[in-house]
Image: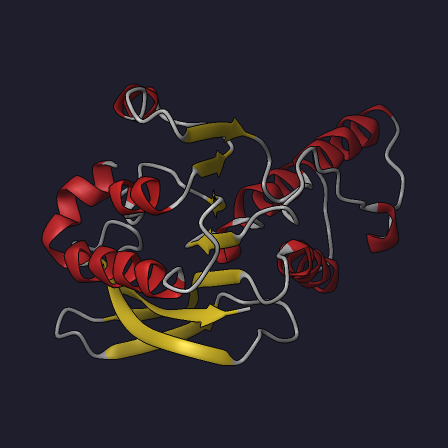
Length: 235
């Protein structure tokens, strides 16, 4: 939220594009239940339009800000769910605790997801600017505790993103995600590009793509601005 306040003018187009893409995606879907995965501060979610179209709007996130809880209190058809969308947080936390007790080698096959929610009974599921974020905190936490090889790190990032995609109900899901990070100098010339998608593939029914001017104050990375390439696609 602090970054949004600082970058509000730069974020405006990205937030508008996300909301418009969601509204277009839901146009011909059923009207009973919709799930928004990664609802956050609702900056990029057209919440009033969704509550007007669907009988139930389910917002999923690891923790809903208190301000958002108060904001949606009067909207009776909103359901708030606090859960680990990635499914791997508890597994990795437990693994780290066990490693501290008795350091042992482990393989990627030992890392299994654990979910406490289902998505198949929704008319529409939106993965909202979260696919590329699911692995970041988990991998940073794991790396701060034990040494893992670059190959295992890549495999785990791949596993987390692949698992997210696999859980989305086919033909009634919509994905919006950053897919590439661009570093720019002060003249906004690109000096580096980095993929944010670590899985082997994404569905290729592209609907729209745009550039998100994420940070133009060199606060995210020293001495350079950061932009993201964002895609929106059916799944």
